[in-house]
Structure formats: structure tokens, C-alpha cells
Length: 188
Image: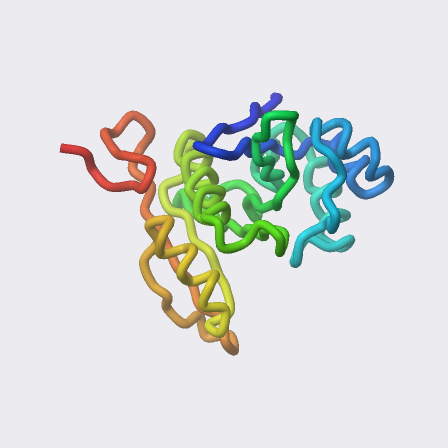
């Protein structure tokens, strides 16, 4: 089952698939062409290293049930195509309680412009539309920018996890079809 791209105000979130994941790891020029973007000055962003790329390839090879529950690429729309500014996604499909974990990383040149908040809200919309009930993010307590990003995207917390310096933040996702705005707040 193919999962389509997701549009936010300034970004297009593009789901990885086995073909895209393969060329990201093995043929970067083909990867950029497949996304329709010019090569960024620095790729990949922090926390999206060769190990993560290989892991994404293995998970996507597991079949259609995993489509859309791993890596998503964040493309900023420009007048002349797109600009690859980051990546993120989920750590697999939701568990039996509807809980899914998300992560995100933005290239240094595009930070402090609201893209991480926008991308995280987009990931929440994707998870909600696919039946997830709760989304969590974990970050280091010392990464205040990441905590601010999650709060701006409607997450509560942070709460310590018991792991050294790791905190968890969470956001309830109303069922698809409920009258809720993109921030998860009920509309009047």
C-alpha cells in the first residue's frame, strides 16, 4: 500500500519507501532526484546517520503494514521545486494501545524558523489519520530547543523516563473526524 505525501503550510512530508530508502543509502544523486530537490549542502541531519538509514531500509523491507510508520523526509516548497531540510518519522506502527513514538531532525541551516514544530505537527496529523491515539517524543533533558519544539506542537511534559537525561513528552490524538484543529485543541 502506497502512502502519500502530507502537506503542511510550508512543507511536504514525503514518506520513505523501499526504493527511496535504498537510493538514500547507496546513491544520493538518485535520492535527491527522486525527491525532486537540489542536493542540500549537508545531508543527512543529526540523528539520521548511516545506521538509521540502514535500519529504515530493513524495516521498510518488512512489507506494506510498515509503510508510512518509519522515515519521512521534510521538503520545503520553493518557487523552483523543493529543498530538503530534515527528516523524522515514527519508530514503527502504534502499539496495541494506539501509542506511537516520533522523532525529528532539521538541518542546521533551517533551524529556529519553525520548521521542526510544523513537521512535528504534520507527523501528529499523519499518526492521527492512521489511527494512533497518543504520540510521544523522547529527548534529552538538556536539549531545551527540542523540548520547546514539542511544547509548541501541543505536547505535554517533559517527564523523566528513568534513563539518564532522557525525558518524554506526549500528546493525545483525538480520533480522526473529531472537531480538532491541527494543534489538537477542540474547536468551538
